[in-house]
Image (cartoon, rainbow over the protein chains, first blue to last red):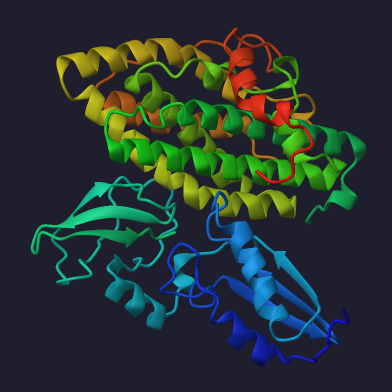
Length: 165
Length: 259
């Protein structure tokens, strides 16, 4: 089988990656999450650099494979996927549009990330259903590394909230 | 002046390898102890929380061993799963049995505050790859500290029984904390070169923080500070059985590629 070599443009690659869902929160894509740092095209060779969200995230290899496949689907045979830790990923990179989709999905979007080391008080969180700030954290670690569990004292709805990292 | 793997002296490279391995070994062993609660924690949320924390610690171990791999080409999986207790360099604090909930939460708190403060200092390392890893991991570690600090407080100020248990846990664990701040061979030279955090400075910050929390907030009297005792190559009898369980699958199927 001869691989077809197409000269995909960076714009086309970015567009393709914008359809790769986050494996744990499929309502947002990896570009919405700010995980894709760089796309470069050198002749027929495409290099995509991404930043992992959490170092222990079990979905990393899924994300890596999905990126490679999305680029291959454009007809590119030579794809390299790199990861970089610098600068470290922060929830501040999540776009406004994606925050709104998280909220509609029932996940409170993250507050602006603080860089203080020891905060015994958690950041203020708004109920994604009724908008109340009168919420109570019920678990500081949720079903995935990036989320916490809350219950809203106003509308009584339990919900997940994104950690500010 | 920023150092790279290529500009380190051979002695610096060896010292860095020892420190990175010590950090990774602590994380791997502590993560295993955390994992022992999976399915057994007092409530479902805590089962999930400890599994999350253990997963983060393994992630950090992966980062540290990744840095080591850049220096000597070693394979992180082989280091984790094919070294015996005699070759592991974890502290005795992390290898002690999981104990009750008070021991588990207090140990995690004592270790997490050490790791958070060490990482905070390591973000200023002149070895750029370490500074990058530290900047990443410290953001995750702050959630561990928040969580375990709250649990220690809850137990200390809770019932008579919970207070009794946290007192017992503190008496058992406190003497082992000094070992966290024991330098590895060649570490002082690395600190002088700005490659690694200054351990006595980290120790002072750690002592101040845990004293304020344990004594100030939780009303727990601190036992006398012990010295570190033997080095990281001397283990309790608890490490070998832990590794036997942790490594059983990898050693039974050494050529397995898909897990």
